[in-house]
Image 1: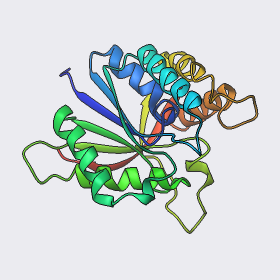
Image 2: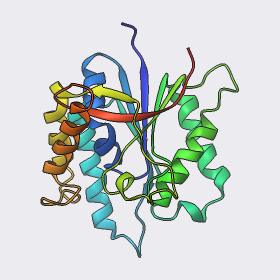
Image 3: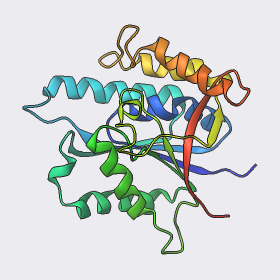
Image 4: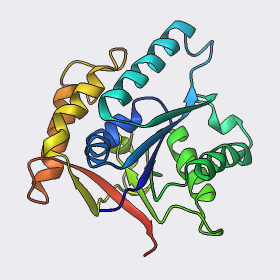
Amino acid sequence: MSRLVKLVVAPHADDEVLGAGGAMARWAGEGHAVHVVVATRGYPPLFAPEAEARCREEAVQAHRRLGVATTRFLDLPAAGLDTLQHRELNARLLTCLQDLAPDELYLPFVGDLHRDHQLVFLSALVAGRPSGPVYPHRIYAYETLSETNWNAPYLSPAFTPNHFVDIGPTLDAKLEAFALFRSQVKEPPHERSLMALRALAVLRGATVGLPAAEAFVTIRTVA
């Protein structure tokens, strides 16, 4: 099996673990290069500096647990991407794609409730256009509990997965990584609880005959 470069883009630190943490652990264990780009950081007055610093350190620890090779923080304003010129986000993500040259690109789902998620998806598609010699040949969208499931039925795209990754052997690694986000983990039955993450993985796995899985929507593949 050839070694692939896989890039997971997260609007906010922890989205990548919620959506693809088990897959990232599996890929890293198989010898693939797994990279993460976190688009935003929290700035005052919406976010306290100490809380943002804590969340960033938690992300680094979680990525280390999953075997992520590199993490980039773009430091764009959280809950404020819609205040930027669209081309600025496009350019920042394009630089990441040019530097890392991923074979596969994993993005938040365009139908997510959070506007930051929608804009990251759109800009990453612009950055990943197959218009040059190097571009991601496979693009997928992941689901984020508390965002993907709260979209407006019939008014925004529904998350209908058609690509599943077996994370039976790496589900515990995903849960351990998310548990390192102590500032983000909630108690059951909250969506961002470890119980909810496990339940979703078991449900996604059951739909394709696996003990646990993560589900994705295929955006584009070029063979």
